[in-house]
Length: 237
Image 1 (cartoon, rainbow, N blue to C red):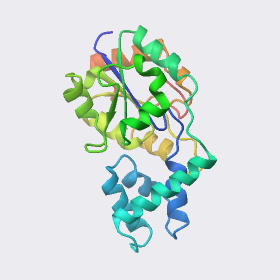
Image 2 (cartoon, one colour):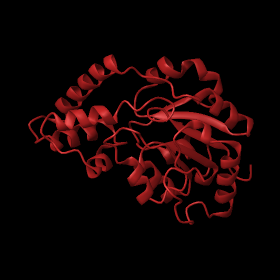
Image 3 (cartoon, rainbow, N blue to C red):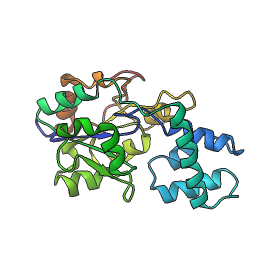
Image 4 (cartoon, rainbow, N blue to C red):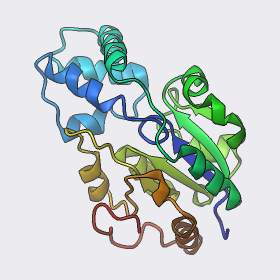
């Protein structure tokens, strides 16, 4: 690799199924609020205490932020009873491919490490450094993961995430980014990623193959990763 040293993979929505968008949509719409792209943009990838305040405001302000957050997690627990957390097909194979390409790998997300241990602990040996970084205190956490945890420059890291806001931060820093937007019917993340100029949008983890990783590496090394116009939606190159 010319510059890439790290692949950082978001947990919920990338390595695990999206169990947040459906719950947030249900939380908002069943309490009289309007679910929109702007709501996703404001709430997603926020520290929990901020997300709680935003959820409360989006439903009329009758709850405090703490009450809204507690109610949200109650809704999420009920959702998980009906729709359990599942590992995304191709997770192990992706980790093996990335490591074979010479990259270190790490997982990150807003929930505690127990969430990682419960659902991805079987693959712990395929992750480097701390294995999992909880970013709740410094979301979205790209700078902290790259600089503080691994001692790298932004252009040495590739982030794979399901939230457009993370792409915006990757662009600001000059880090690599691959988007895996949610397929939830009411999700706005694909459109938001396209608006943000995300060049690489994938549906399955198998699309992150050696060819794509090396292309991203070349573009990051030449400083052109974020320069080219976005490609058509649904393509990975």
